[in-house]
Length: 186
Image (cartoon, rainbow, N blue to C red; front, top):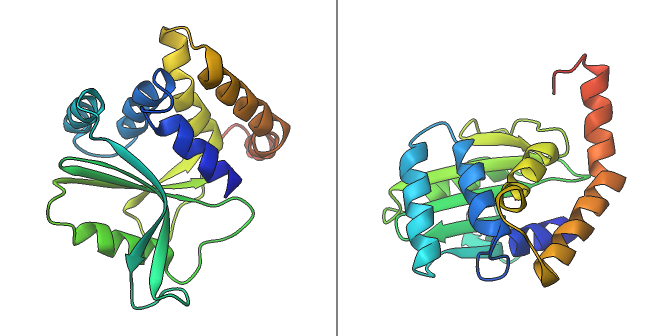
């Protein structure tokens, strides 16, 4: 939950004015289809302040928690698009989560572009093949796109630096170890 909270902050252009727009454009480049249209819609939503990044987004499901809801870790949306990110650190996918979340996303008729990512320390695939695997090293690469182009300062710089340090001390060590053991293949 702590990782998802910080990721939400860093991907929200209202909070992270330099990091978020570039990170979002880098993330959608990893989706299999319509990359140019994703980029266009995200740029418009950022400019018009209509992009939303929500945590623990509750959706009604048949196979859900005790409240009759599934909870999407991160939902990034704007006019015409929705991107679900399911984040797993120290736990596995359960109760057909990605199938349920994709079904909900698919049913959102107002969204022309629909995408999903499964974020894990080493980029494991989700049960639902519509979820693009994403490792924390991939995420870090996206988060550093903005600072690679423009100077970041203030709270945004502090949050990003702290999060990079947190990742380096834990999750990225695990990911790099797995990559080294696999002969360089994540």
